[in-house]
Image 1 (cartoon, rainbow, N blue to C red):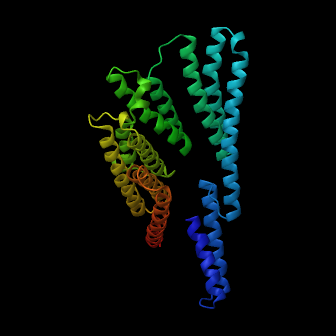
Image 2: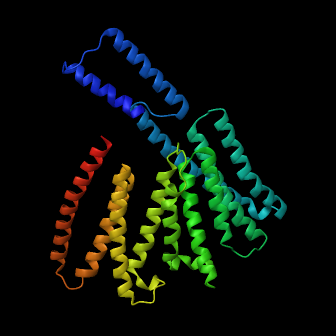
Image 3: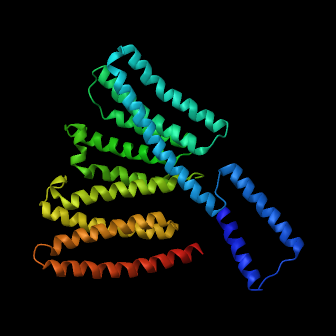
Length: 344
């Protein structure tokens, strides 16, 4: 709504310059007071950016929060690595258990005192990393056998914190971890080492599909736009898995010739990416459209390479790639126009 108010004010100013509309001073004053009241309320409740300058500052704050998260994580890990050997096991366990709790306490305090969303996001992100480090280190201390269930604990912890604090970055990380957990269970059921699921990326596709479809299955108020994260994570993970198999057919479960498997997955990638583009247009989400378009281009070039690289002159191959790029630009331009029309 803040964006609509900004656009309305710009169009109103343009109409007044063109002398197509003229409000009485009393009407303009009442309108300005009402709009300012709305913007103040939206800023207080949701922390929205009501101007371009505040948008730029917010992007800078997001980058600073991300860099700060990485720096704090590195500082904690390096400090513990420096003193770890001199601590008894009881002290090691106490430190590992305490760090995530301290970080979550700090995040809760910043949220309750309304210090700022970026500080809360930074502390929550570091708490997720600390929890991952905690379980890994505890397993090393007590000489536990590595288990895929650690992925479930990490992913569940990240998703719970994402919903508790309305943060999208922990949600994306948690969803990826949970998808990896389901794939590791498939490897474990096949009597393979659970880490070997990376060698069979097909096992990631069912979990990725479920992740993409969850916003349809579970319909609930989405104040923080979590549905977008579900769809992006699911689509991106499925694209990566299909791309790996389309390049190396030996990584597939299918009992077919590797070349046949690669061809099947190349076509599957093209169809799936085109479907994501169409769905993104239907949802009016440019991020989903861009992801699908990028995947379509990648799968198309992989298919071109499989068809022509071995026998075609290299100058002709790149010429065809350039012509294809021009055609794709024309198609994407039409898609963008349709997206703009739907938003209007």
